Image (cartoon, rainbow, N blue to C red):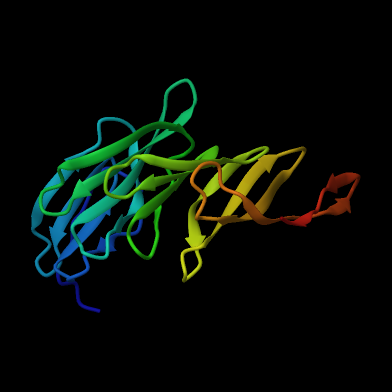
Length: 206
C-alpha cells in the first residue's frame, strides 16, 4: 500500500483512469486529458479540451494507437463531443461534435472497427474516420452510456432514463449490423403501480 507517485489537483471530477495496452501509460481526465508515465507519474502530454469537461475513463483501441474520449458541455442545452486521439502525442485524429447528451464515455466494438456514443440518440461511428454509420433514437428520454456489447459484437445493450412523474428507465438490445437506423432485438421496461403512480412495462421481440 505504499505510494509510488501521485498526480494531484488536476481540474475535474477525478473519474476512473485508463491504462495503455502495454502498461506504460496511464490516462486521466478532467477538463483536460493527461497521459502519465505509469511507473514514475511523469507527464507525457496533455490534450486540452476546447469546452466542457472530459468524461472518463477514455477507451483505447486494441492496438494501443488510438484513444477515444467524450466531453460534455452546456450551451443552451446539454451536449457532447467525441474525440479520437493519437496515443503518442494526444493529437486529434477526428471528432464527432455537438451531439445532444451528457458526453458519457463511448464503447468500442471488439474488432475495433466501430465506436458507439450515447446521448438522446445512439450513434455508431467508423472508428478510423469518425464517419456516422447509423443512429438509433429512443422514443423518450436519454441514453445512458457507455453501452455494453455482446462478445460477438452483434448485439448492443443500452439503458435509457426519462422522467414521467418519477425517475424511470428502460433497456434496449440493438442489432449492430444495420447500415442505417438499427433494428431493435427487444426492449424491456418496468411496470408497477405505487401510490397511484403507474410505471409501464413492455417486452417486445422483433
